[in-house]
Image (cartoon, rainbow, N blue to C red; front, side):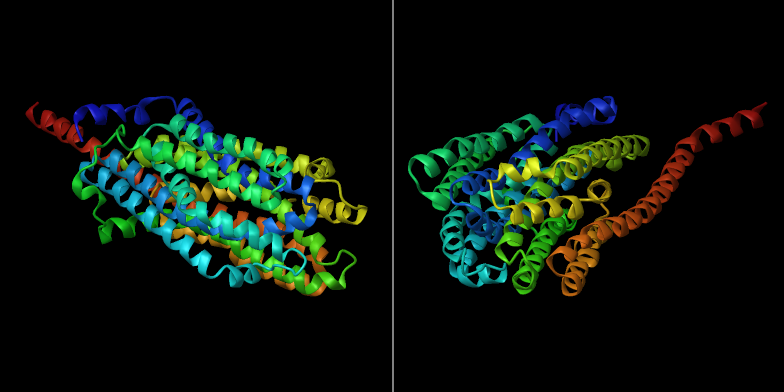
Length: 479
């Protein structure tokens, strides 16, 4: 990397941390929010036209799209974190190779996942809890969505690398472009051409293709590195490190898949014994999970926006700035969590009505979903942001443990146990319980890492003071 490019990244070590966090987080939040809104927009229009069976169908397909996002972030966030650490430590060779390897991995993963989905559509739908009533809608929606999976994975993954390269605004525009196209084409295909769930799926993949084209165009001339022939040659060490750094983001998303799959199957099993049946909880829980995804888009977006600043300064040994950015990230997440919790507890019906007008029984269960399931959203935001922080400073094991704790270790068993004991209403309490337990683990892990960083900081200060001490000693002897 030339000295000019190194200077271009020096502002990460010198500019005010609040200004840097705003610069990176706002586009990142908007990008992730738009990604979350892809499915929300489909569900709103489908709910208004097809009804709750259409929403239940999109809820069944939703976990597969989350699998795609998980794989995209495994590669993309891993590449971005690797790039930030490399730039901070002045590793010129690694900076271009980690992104080149990330691009190749994204393309391969996208194509492979699409093929798997096309071959195993029926088993996948049954795995995610499809019912007989919504099967036809789910099949139609998924078969079309699969065609856009490679474009979706490349865009979702490599936009993280664009942000780490110092262009969060470009990343935002690339994502927003696809969302705007989807927003325009959704009502046209559903209400004008009467294509139902098929129309919503077609609108989605057209938007994904547009975003992918713009994302790919960026890498013609990135800011902080230049590609070489060997950049795109897969290297096992680089690919492994990318996956290690991205595994926390991967687990965060895969955990959502596990949660939805387990919840859907428990609903299908326990729903018929409740007054709500199976399809009402299937639709309501799906809506709540997607609204939850919007809140997490804010939470993780703020944390991921701070990742380049944290990673660069950690690589450069500037630990005070690392702590400063983390504190700001947590304060922002507390604000997001508090506002969300207030909204969900006080006026859930306003949100429910966005997805169509249904029966009183449906509204009753949907309100319970928001008030109970999302009751610990404030603690969840802090936990998610802290996991990204650990990922940013190159601590994949601790980040993975924290990511697994809330969604897999605590929530999934809670859903199974409470649904078996108290039915489809009782299982909603598994989420706030998991939020409390994972928050306690967050305090423990962040506390341990803070002590470790402070020891490093003290060690660096001692090293920098040694030459001065030596000079003073010599001066005294001469006198």
